[in-house]
Length: 450
Image 1 (cartoon, one colour):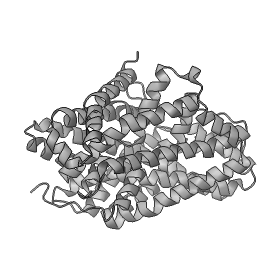
Image 2 (cartoon, rainbow, N blue to C red):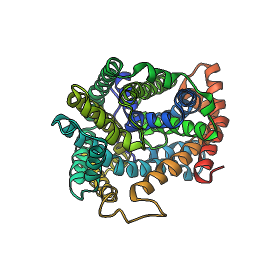
Image 3 (cartoon, one colour):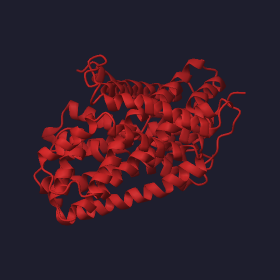
């Protein structure tokens, strides 16, 4: 019978926290957040972003985790089960389908970028960045991404690492990976912050990130901060829901969500403190998103003393962040196939991994031999990013909030969360009214503009 297989459970609260933080912390925290902060004027953006993380993102995080734990199945099966228990239409399973399909699409191009980070670890370690110029850095990156073969090899290597972790299961794979990789990520990041503080323009970076210039704040910057806070927590992609399904009832979801949101925000802030002192010290331009990491920072690494070592650590940090997110993106699809009783976890992981690699190969080739191919005027990877980040995630997040706020009995939610009554009232008001409205505003702005 479908859904008959029992999900495993996290062996400890610590393992779950590390896994959930690993899902949330990804390349977006380390390269997109600094880029967005720079585009938004620094401190004003950071403060608004942090406010949104805890006022909008965290309530949604609690909601998604609670759905996962109550369902104890993959996102699709969990939504089916809960809707049936609450006497609601089976159409609510579309929220689960959106998460599973969305995470599969994201991993197909996320792993391409993950492959780039692996490539740059080797490049930095081998001294390939020594003395590199602006023109040289741009030429190297363009040569890598437009090559029809090399990025596919790195893409395959990154996907193989991801599949190798996921196929080992919850305790044997996910737990072991995140309990090693996440502490390593924080150590590497703190080490880079210390290095930047000693050798770079640390005071200028601190002022930039924490001294708000409210003249730079406008509706667009605020909406970007709201969108970044929503997406940075890995919400509505099925990852958080499936991780919630491995939770035992003794874990306080509210406290866990605050810990996860705090750790995710800390990584973003630390990334800014690691990157901006170097950018300011070498008078570099942040440029576009991928340019900051793959074309701007290599110039600094090529000029600084010990740059090969620092560059290796930095791109190693990026790779760790990418892996902890990629395993959470693969997990929803694998867990769903595993529940069919027709496939073992290993076979499911291999099937999804190969399918994601093949779909991702189109994204990789879209920078080179397929660069002329467009979908609704967007590149292959641009189209994938648009439909997941701008359409599927906001809509799934909004309907998830509406489902919990309006279509599940208040008592069953209280029983699931076991929150203090005062805190529950605040959370329930946010998830019922504020979160759906805020997401709708972001969605409208993204799709139609003001």
